[in-house]
Length: 163
Image (tube, rainbow, N blue to C red):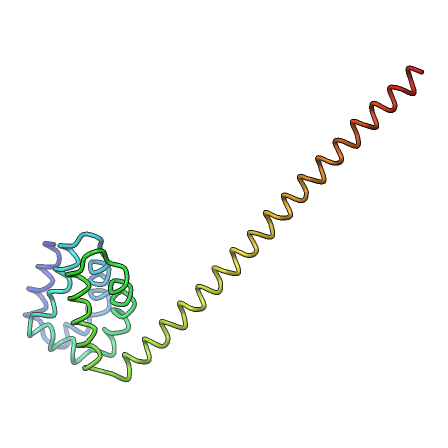
């Protein structure tokens, strides 16, 4: 949390050029903090939007920052255990929507189609695994039959040799 506090202090004092130089790595790190299961860390990352100087930087660079933050905001809005964190994410999501509705909708569409593709791949992977397990089961049954046949053959040969 001290890291986030230091980031806020720096962001409130730097100019546009400096902000643009650090925005990508900084917001990737902030997104990781936002995704933290630790409520205090996630809340602290979200409180950045209450600082006017920081929000001014975000607004002027939303086309760079929104694509970095969108997947995390979406995930946290659906999966974080804390109602407070989800409420803050909802407020920030609305802010991003107002900032750049076209980009927001495009990112939302792309994100949902990517999740659909991932679900389809997971389903395909699961189906292939089930086929492998079925083949293994069938092979085990075949081996069992072969062993039974072979043991019967050995018994039959013993009878022939003994007689």
